[in-house]
Image 1 (cartoon, rainbow, N blue to C red):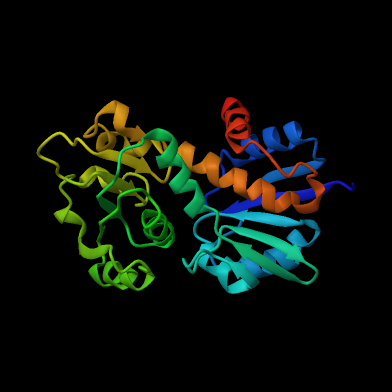
Image 2 (image 1 turned 90 degrees about the vertical axis):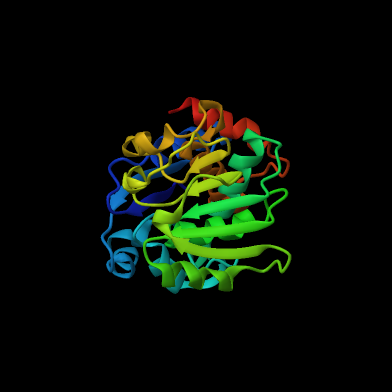
Length: 267
């Protein structure tokens, strides 16, 4: 097996934990893969992957490039989100995937067995789209409410809803009060701190990011009900690792939970 090169692309990217967790996974699986972080600014993805990135076999894609990655995907499995966080080179074209949906669902499932009747999504960007698709597969979901600064963008996410039995609401961000069973925060780091929550929140929180800038918002939740964004990162990365490996990985019955633990220990 020839050495293969992969990278996570985004801007900013210096904070990314992906190189550590991917390296741990490849070492455990015996794969001769290199994985690094590369800063690519908005609007520059296509140029990069066909120039400096031409020797790479695939990419993890983070903000602000997920919509650009979706546009570059020839054959895609984006889980109905319209956004892409995984590109795999297929000759001169790329196959695109969304592993964020899986990451969100698994992070919640491994944190609690409680049913999440009412789900709040903070934000209306690329990750919010993945959160909405993921919420439809979380046990017990009956209502999803999207809270965003742009009410039109929040309302537009209703088009992603595929399960008719799940109700959808859209409201301005300031209306959020923390009364839901599960809150998925997809806002840029620190924005949620501006929300005024008068009473302690009994529901669960999943932060899609892992920024320390969100600490003031997180303190509104019981410590035992906070799911770190790192858990989402780990679970989406496991699925990404399998996609990157493809036929290089002989084991068809991989214990994903064990691999996640190995990746977690690398942090």
